[in-house]
Image (cartoon, rainbow, N blue to C red):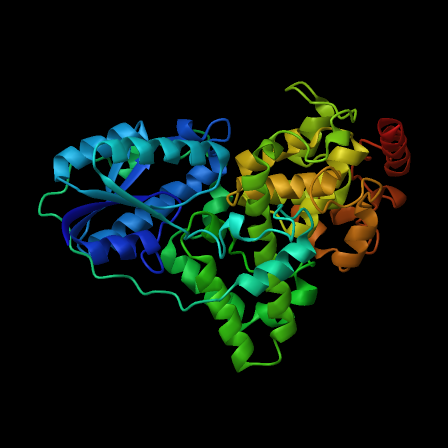
Length: 468
């Protein structure tokens, strides 16, 4: 058994079911938990403002948990390799353990770190803690990556064995931890206090993640099949940010879901649909690993010539969409929910994305960038998949001619108008039953910035010419 090992925390900010931490505790007498803040190494997709808010609070929670277990977290900022080398010198560590991530820039960075440490005789071990299955493990019969979700998930379920999650290990730290920073020193909180609603709606950290999982499995999961599409109901798991930052593992989620199904037949249908959503998260990372260029380019090459426009800071139509002032209540409500809470209901995400890319013919890349900065659950794989799916240019994408009608979507999924009226108080003088199309009734709600019918026709004509 080696004397000392470093555990390099990244987006695995938990103690339970953490393979790198478990292995380090098993292999070394003492462990040194380390977090290195190096957003520049994730460029051009370094975390946005909302993600940094979450990270600030998640790191504080992790630091407190590790302190309580007798192994203080060492926080550093700067080049990851350089910081690891300094910590190896300071602690005499013989090995560095970490859990894998799958963004293109991070994969390249980790390969350089692994090679450089290996040349110095330092043992490195990395583990899968972020996904149920490694992306390269699920391939079609020709050995190629899947581009359609249903056969991908069928194959993945055949490979998958959901295991019981591991409890937090017993930690033993070195007597004198190396010098480090405080969480506040990382300056993760935005200078402009726009994020007041984030604190009202979220509690980052491992304990909160486990509590949220338990709350969802015990109640909303049973009705998830129907309620997941209703932005006016608390029908979703709200686990996406916890999963993104690794405060909870996908195996913990899958284990709880399967356990609930075994104990209660009533919620089986809802649990199965929920597991499909976990499958979409897996599929997104599978695509990102095999097609890393899709963060900025369409997967379908025929869409490279599509006449989307890339807006600048003076583009009034784009700013109206960003701030929720399009005159279309469901779109406005979604964008205001995003700005206030750092999150948006998935059904509404599809509607606002369709409105931007098809009714406004603004590029999906511009929408993806706005979501990236404002979502607390901004995940590069899922964000890329979601935007390309709605725009019609990605894997398993909705056909371009499927253009979400925000009026019909609102009437179907927000039938009592509670969601739009909550986020758009200017609807107060609109009669009940007309809130999703307020311009058809007397009132003061602004007119839409585009005609939904005409803009749909323009988009379809653009698609026709692009194909030709």
